[in-house]
Image (cartoon, rainbow, N blue to C red; front, top):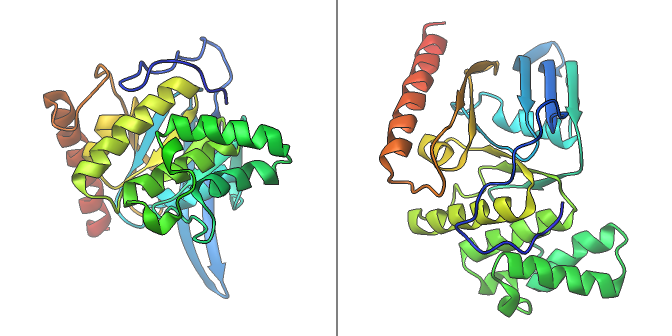
Length: 268
């Protein structure tokens, strides 16, 4: 992952991968079954999915459809029961909770990821400054997490994720706990950072409108066990707003498909 000197948000999306280029992520017939004694719980069933380099893919579905299980497989935190998972590059994780160390400053929370990678102290200082500039928090480097707003803590978590030298950022409902105004600001921030870094993003959310606002590819998972029920290619121009007509129309279409899946699961 390389930070470029492009202008702040709104930023143009990163250049698409060249035709024929290897994807950032590829899943082939991936299934995941959890076992406890004689009990088995299928979480994912036969997932086949390709995520292009530099893309912004949003994954939506009803609660319990396996979205978080999918991210765990992509992050290498779990292994599939069958099928293959291929991830090209280093993956960073970001969750709904910022999970910052409360006794460390903003600077030290970000620097810790660099230290664990073996980056020298001098290089760490420079890289932390660059990352905090990226999320507009350089003036808050000495603050502790409890002195920050929820949105600011998520910005620190975002900087820390990129400090892992992430080519791929896996995000598990990172803005779900934020109020609507802060979430809208974070959408702008994330889109800007995506444009400047060229990272590949996989963004899990239960908020269909958020997926339509952010994604250029939306994957709808069926109810458990999770299967790819439908994929949407998003052709809406950027920058987008959450209230845009095109975003609303796409969200309505995705929601209708989601309701069909939930109803089919209920009938089953």
